Image 1 (cartoon, rainbow, N blue to C red):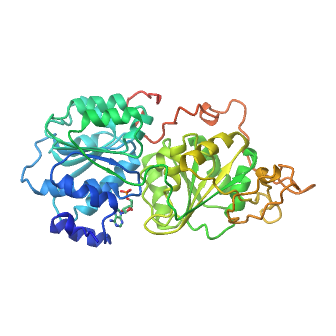
Image 2 (cartoon, helix red, strand yellow):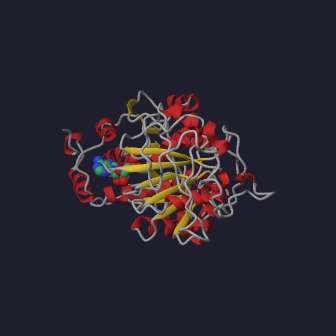
Image 3 (cartoon, helix red, strand yellow):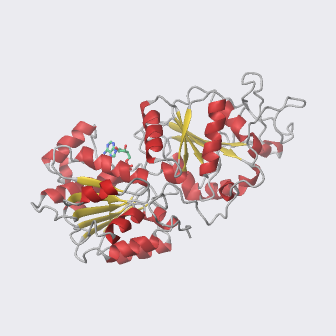
Length: 470
Ligand code: AMP
C-alpha cells in the first residue's frame, strides 16, 4: 500500500501528518502529490471529502521548502482561490496543521470582515494567501496585494465558482498572474464552461479523477419521506426523536428557510444554530464550534455556507428540502459517512419537489428508498406523533426496500389517503411552515437553473455590489 513517504513528501510534512492521525493517502492524494511535487499542473476532478485539500496543500508546502525565496512586500508565493469563506477558512486551517513544523506565513482574504487587518497581514508579504474572489479583487485594486510573484495558483471548487457568478472575477485574477506558474484546478463536475476554463488555465496537466459526482458513498443509507411542505417542520421534529441522530446537518435551500427551521427547532426544545451568508462571521464560527464540540447536535445550513465545513462524525444529513440542482444532493449527503464511518441521509420531499427528486435519482442512478416519518409538534410532542403514509405506496408503489428509519412504519399500500394521519387523527401543529404572502423572493421556488448565492464574499459591507449568479 502507498504511504505518504512513498509520495516523496519531506520529513517535517510527514511528521505533521502523523500528528494529524493521517495514515494512508487517499486516492486523490496518491494520484496528485508526486506530480504536483514535480511541478506539474493538475486537473483534479474531486469533491469535498476526498482529501483534495491535502492533495494540493502537501505538495505545495513541499515545493515551498525547495526554495529559500521570501515573498516581497505585498506579494505572495501561493494563491489558493476558494468560492466561500467557510471553505477558505477550512483550507487555511488545514495548511496551518500540515505546516506545523515549518515556518511559512498564511493569510486569509475574504469579505464580510473589516479589510484593514487583511491589508496589514499582506503588507510584509505572505507565503500562502487563501482568498475568495471578491475581496481578493478589492485588495488588488487597492494595491494592498500583487500577484506578480505567485508561483503556484490553486483554483478550488471551480464549478461552484461558476454557479456563484465568479467567472469574470476569476478571469480578472488569472490575467494578473505571472504566465510562468504552476496551476492546480479542482472541480467536482466538469460542465463545458469549466472544461474550457481548465484548458485555458492549465498547461499539459496531469488529470486525477476520483469519485465521480454521480456516485454516492456506499456507506450512506439514503431515504426519502414524502410529506406535504406545510408538515415538514413537524416531520423534522418527529425524526429528531431518534437519538441515533447524534450529529445532524440539516440543509435548506434558502437562508430564510434555515432561519425558520432553527426558530421552529428552538421553540420545540431542540438546540440548533443556523449557518448562512447573512450571519456574521462570528455567529458562523460560534455555530460551527458548538456543532464540532458536540454542544449542539444540530446545524442548519444553506448549501453554500456548508461548503467546506469540515466536521467528522456527522451521523445524519437531513435534506429539509430537495435541492433543485441534483449535484447539490450528492455534495450534501457526502457530509456524512466520512473517514470510514457510517451515515444516513434523509430527505423530506414536498409535493412540489417530486421532479427534483427524480432528477437526483437519475443522477445517482438509483431510487432513494421511501420510508415513513412521524410528525412531532411544538405543543404536544408526545401525543401528536402521527404516522405519515407514503403517497407512492398509496398509488401501489411501495418503497423500494428501504428500511424504515427513525420513527418510520411500514407502508400500508392501498389504505392511505395521501394525507397525514389516520382517519380522524388530530392535525398536529406543524409550526409556521407556510410561506406568508409577500415572503421574500428567496423563499419562493426558484428556477432550477439558478442556484442561490449564499455565504460568498459578496456584498457584505465591503462596498461591492451584489451580482446575481447567472
Ligand atoms: P477534504 O476533501 O480536503 O475536505 O478532506 C476531507 C476530510 O478528510 C478532512 O477532515 C481531512 O482532514 C481528512 N483527510 C484528508 N486526507 C486524509 C488522510 N489521508 N487520512 C485521514 N484523513 C484525511
